[in-house]
Length: 272
Image 1 (cartoon, helix red, strand yellow):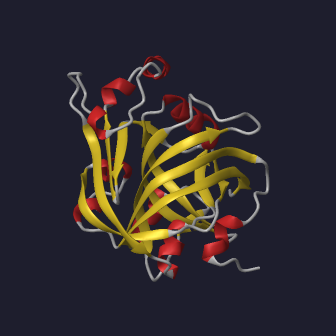
Image 2 (cartoon, one colour):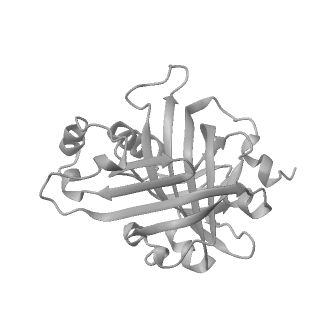
Image 3 (cartoon, one colour):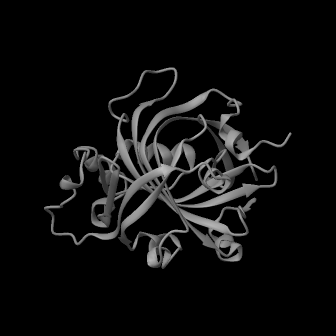
């Protein structure tokens, strides 16, 4: 049965949910790319998803709230965090339209440890924060590589860092020079219910490399109410670190905002 892009993420989870999140203030920016240029960045068994004649790489920024790991109630430790991602839209041989995260930058250390160990998703420690004023959304993420050195000991020490709630908290008092940063600011406008907007944002799940295998994590959420956005600021060198140099050198080919939704993740299966 062919599933329309709008209904793609409404299919029931095949297995019980692993995590449930509220997504708030989401920014989606996507750029057209040559499929052959993106293919080497993907784990085996999947390929770039060609939509409207192009493969696509993107940036997404959002706030996770009310995180829950069923059957347990929402956790304060994992409950709220900002994430800034660089991603590639993907499809596998079974026709599942997903996304590969080249990086998920966040300051939530428990999420970083869990994602690496259990999901195969490349979370990276970063001082990430965002704010919204009316229809203006702004996110910033700055990595501090020196704070990640030392393996497990660094992870443990980072656990004492206070979560950031705004961009005003992003300044570092340390001597290490920040690098690999991203800043994006957009102004949301009218609703965009075009097929292209839906295709780029409604993905059936995550393709990830877990140990020696490529796996698929199913994603479920209601149909998204998307809004066109106007770009005010986009800068940073984060794409350089994940194999997509120059991604921010031109304006996105698609720029959208999602005010909120609830996302549920569940195990899919092994792709290869």
